[in-house]
Image 1: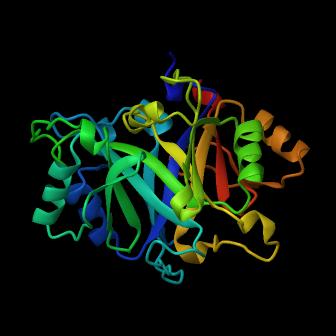
Image 2 (image 1 turned 135 degrees about the horizontal axis):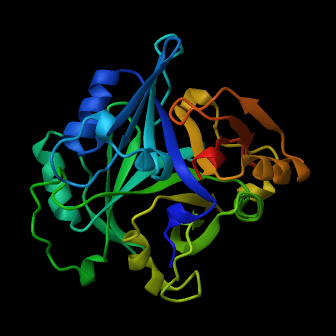
Image 3 (image 1 turned 90 degrees about the vertical axis):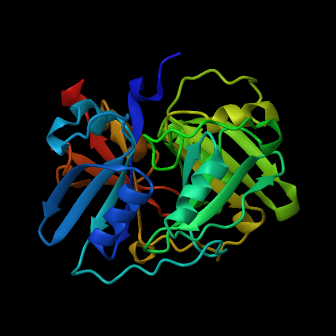
Length: 324
């Protein structure tokens, strides 16, 4: 099956604002094992682009393949000293829109031990029903990060530690998670307009919410039923990033309810790269969504635009037509 990055559109960035560039870069590189792939400055702001790269001889930023910068989902950290410091609230917070990043690993206990050895506070790992074996910790700005194991606790066989990886086994940038008020409206926006595909729907009845996992991927599910439990371990082993929605039941019926989605939260949205941004823009505008043309993208030096989803989360559209 074609990989997610071969699609006409793909998830390209997850953008967070940080208070101290040196502290955050040290955490993501030295503790989590990400590589600083590019750095761009605009006026008083500095944008850092990080991702997981294959082990081997250390690469300078100039040696990183252009394809990786164009086609992989990167973590973008923005240091903006002239803007107010972001108010990053402790999770879970029922009023907070943005929730977390998830990183998948083959052996969660090994990864957690590595974090603890480096002085990172990590909660206890747990098998959450028939969803995943996971744990959580926070980065220097208090953003929540989740570790998800490839397989359920009861199915797991210990993996040998690989010294090439800071977390002990190969990591993958798996999820960007935020909350949505009206799941039906959000699914229509992301699937029918933005071209994403629903890969899994997971109901957590005891806690009154449903999780939706979407991606730009043509991979065939083990079972065509998106609610099938047998798809879930497969999901945590994917090499590409997905968007996860949490829909808390009942919010769709409260016209006065809205999640905090403004830039003060620190979450500055996601970016998608489209082979034909004009076609995507026309589709969005045809459905009544305002699309605002912006400055050129700092990393790819091409035109961009911003659209907001039904909850007000910003999505940057990056034109990659020239590179295809």
